Length: 111
Image (cartoon, rainbow, N blue to C red; front, top):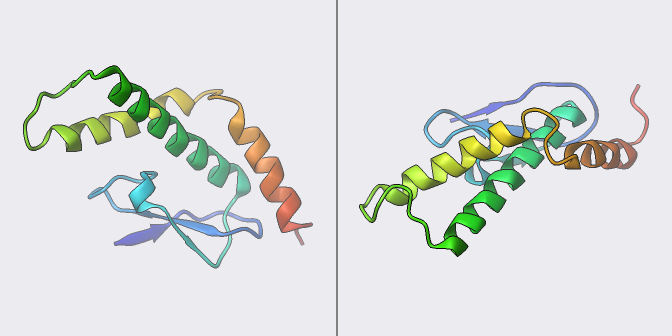
C-alpha cells in the first residue's frame, strides 16, 4: 500500500511503500503527479543512493553479513537501506543540497 510523503512545491510526489518493503527503498519509491517538498525528495534520493552504494561495495568485497541462507539477501538489503539512511541523515554526502537546487530550478517559481 502506497502512502505519499506530503510536502509543498511543484515537483513529483514520492510515494513510499508501507513497512512491508521499507520507505525509501528503490522498489518502494514511485513517482506520481503531485507536490512534495524538494528538500524531502532530495534527502530521500540521497538516502536511496547511499544504500545502493553500500550494497554494491559489500557485494564487491564478497562479505556475506548474514550467511548463505534463503533470507540472507533480504536482511542484507534491509541492512544496506537502513545504513544508507543513517549515513545520509546528517550532512550526508552533500548531494541532497545540489539535487534540491536542481529540482527547484526545474520546477520554476513557487506561488
